[in-house]
Image (cartoon, rainbow, N blue to C red; front, side):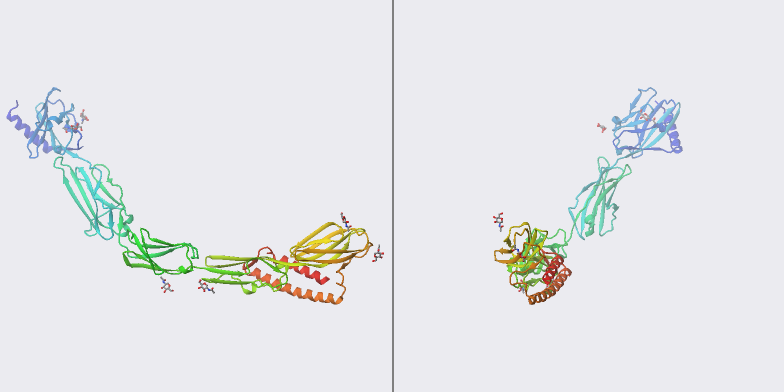
Amino acid sequence: MHSAAYYVGAIIISAMFLQASSSDSIVVLYGETIEVPCNNGGELGDPLFIKWKYDEADGSPGAILTKGRDPGDVTIQATNSYKNRASIAANASLLITNATLEDEKTFTCMVVISGDIEEFPVVVKVQKRPSPPLIKDMAAELENGKLTTLGDCLAQDAHPPAEVIWSKNGLPLADDGTATIITTEETKDPATGLSSTSSKLQYTAKKADVDSEFTCTVKHVLGPDQTSEPRTFSIHYPTERVELQVVANGPIKEGDDVTLKCSADGNPPPTSFNFLLQGKMETVVGSDSYTLVGVTRANTGEYECSVADDHTLQDAKNISVNFLDISLDPSGEIVRAVGVSLPVTVQKNSSGDVKDNVKLDTQPNFDNLKYSDAGLYVCEFSTSGIKQSRFFRLAVQGKPNIKTISKTRVDKQHKVLTCEAEGAPKPSVEWSINGTNEESSYENGMLTHRITVVPTGNLTVACRVTNELGMDVKYIDVSYLFEDNDKRKGPGDGDDQAKLIVGIVVGLILAAAVMGLVYWVYMKKTRQGSWKTGEKESGTSEESKKLEENNHKADV
Ligand SMILES: *[C@@H]1O[C@H](CO)[C@@H](O)[C@H](O)[C@H]1NC(C)=O
Ligand SMILES: *[C@@H]1O[C@H](CO)[C@@H](O)[C@H](O)[C@H]1NC(C)=O
Ligand SMILES: *[C@@H]1O[C@H](CO)[C@@H](O)[C@H](O)[C@H]1NC(C)=O
Ligand SMILES: *[C@@H]1O[C@H](CO)[C@@H](O)[C@H](O)[C@H]1NC(C)=O
Ligand SMILES: *[C@@H]1O[C@H](CO)[C@@H](O)[C@H](O)[C@H]1NC(C)=O
Ligand SMILES: *[C@@H]1O[C@H](CO)[C@@H](O)[C@H](O)[C@H]1NC(C)=O
């Protein structure tokens, strides 16, 4: 038992001591064990007696435990929760398990060393990190221009209270009293004393906020910031404008499918539309498109669409369906007799200008069909997006007509006989003499046939040329003896000088016709691809052959 004077002295000394030294302070985590060091862990000497006490809220002292010299001499004095939670370490530190906010007070270690009493007060602070941000009452979507509660962000069970911050695209949002309102509230759990902070964000979205990312961040003295997953919101706004789009690849032509698409600028978009199709109303539900399948020129006209429940929101477009009608006469496979005339006519009807058009002066027109006119004729036309071609394949027929029959001496015994005849289809040739080295060519209705013979006497040899339309025959004398090459027409033919002159005149006329042909070929080549002759495409070779043929005739 100590005397009253002892205690009075101890109190005076401890008061002096407190004035002389500032308190230490420690921070511990909520729920963990508090270790309150005595004299900040410094040397205590050999104390007779150690007492741990604390200051009650009203300033009165509260005893926890005492420890005598003997290591086992520990007395728990506390009658409150410290009775079970408090203990003393060998180095005189006070240990208190399961720290709560109640433990935020000043603990004092009183040490008695041979008559001296020292006190070491320690201020204990308890802190707790909040739980991660929890967002409640999250908006499903936002409405353009309307103040809407976007969400309520909660940071629970913290000490000291946590700070809650809303951010948009990473930048903190501030309350501006009108478009952005942030209401922060702090509550304290009456049992634990821990604080929860809630922050309600009311926000007026704009259309541009459709991509904005909203986050909530919880800041606390303990540990790093905790941020919620970013959230985006769909922004609702009414339709103000509709646009009718005509979906087609390039200019529209007959047979195309044309899709009309009615786009509205609202979000969510309207779900049904009215399409006014050349005066006929079609309502489409659940889609913004209407497809016209296989349009014709009759579909050319005005089209309109509107939002089904608001006819004032509408748009119109004109659709023009291009068409091209071509008729070529003659067409297909045709057969004509040599020498007749063949008029060629093209008729066209189109929605627009027809390009690559055939000009009348370049169009073939046959006054007097020649065998060489046979072939494939193709004409091509185009107008916006449409290309069409037409053709005819001309066959020129006529009965055989032997032009020349001639002979050439090769050596003492052999002579070559040549028979040239026009005619189509290809005629067959028959000689009245047996021969060898038979050679035959047929082009542009001209057949050239050669045989090599060995004359056994003075003979008159016949060349007989036949096709399904008729036959022609001519004769030539072949002598046994050596004689000069000669070229003879058949009997009654070729011995008349007047006829020769006529021949020359005819030749000149034909030459003039060739000039005309050359001009046509030239036109054909300069007007790109208007007309082409498929099977006899090389105008120049055709032309040169003509020239050759006519030269030959002039020679006669
Ligand atoms: C005192 O002892 C306790 C328990 O043995 C130990 O955890 C602590 O670090 C010691 N304190 C000082 C200041 O040495
Ligand atoms: C102290 O904490 C431990 C472990 O967390 C627990 O098992 C025990 O029940 C707590 N005691 C009190 C008194 O709260
Ligand atoms: C469609 O064409 C008609 C006649 O040319 C014209 O009156 C109308 O304004 C046009 N509509 C649109 C939407 O261009
Ligand atoms: C061309 O086609 C249009 C539309 O089919 C038709 O009205 C017009 O009569 C045609 N013109 C001729 C010359 O065929
Ligand atoms: C041609 O030859 C055939 C058989 O080789 C013969 O029968 C025929 O008499 C000959 N004709 C002439 C005109 O020599
Ligand atoms: C063939 O005719 C030539 C003159 O044309 C004559 O000289 C010759 O004698 C004739 N030969 C025969 C075998 O008749």
